[in-house]
Length: 408
Image (cartoon, rainbow, N blue to C red; front, top):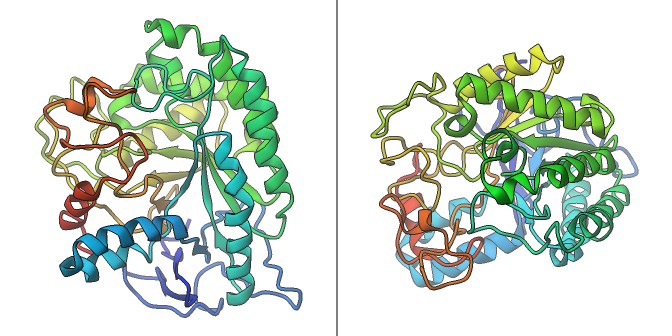
């Protein structure tokens, strides 16, 4: 895999763009389709060639979510003195979380907007969607519990009302590349948390539901990445082999490993790309960073017959190490900073750095009297004053922007 950085950033509404071209981060390239590695121009019908089986981010533009731009603008209105720095965030592609059945109603709006930009620019515009509505979701935590339960027929509803509706929208947009992250905080819980009763009762539903989502959402123009947790969760060798075996079993049930492009790590987490001095004890974990974890997971996957997969790493908030007293701290971590900007093929084996967790959106409420409160969100490493998961956390955005590494 060549070390080009060809994942481009779209500026809306002007449809200008700043490119991650070949060479160092920040190099400028035009949006015309002939400068970035892997780019293809539109044909006379405005259709972009879809690189089936290849890295979908190579030569592509990242879709800018207008809803995220509006959130950033709300902070700029409160802090006009920081407008220049904050507006740089509006030029970066962030993933769109489909975390409820109701959110699926907006899917066509995003896809239509991305397609309109693509046809205007003559270059692929890739939206990233997070598939995140499993029954008994996030079984070992509380902050992100979802709307569906296994006991109340959640598996059937997940299939018919959620996955099938997403599949219909994807199928109706065959002329654009679509990337999807499959169910964060799901299969990792099967690997390590079956001692938690809620996770034990969720295992069969997780396996069945994830396999169904993969089987239904896999199409020639879609690129699926199964969530693979992060180094601080599954980096220990036993855990790495457990999750590789689970992936093999679930992918077999879905129709084979060829249904997915690869795996996504560090989703909504804070683990650094490369090792830094930390305040916590690694406790024998050989994977001190996400790059090492990807290498170890690649080897574990090969041992169970899964090869040739690409990886995404969420770099939206992992710019700074040495900020946590325990590796398990995951909620609005104090001192965190925005990390590397999205880039295609930044290292061998990686399809891209991407921003899956939109910076500024909360991990969970710090109010102990609120619904879905999780003690991690009021722990010693957590930022106070946090709203519910997914809601806008203005003060936290300012912290992430101030601590951005590299700087905004």
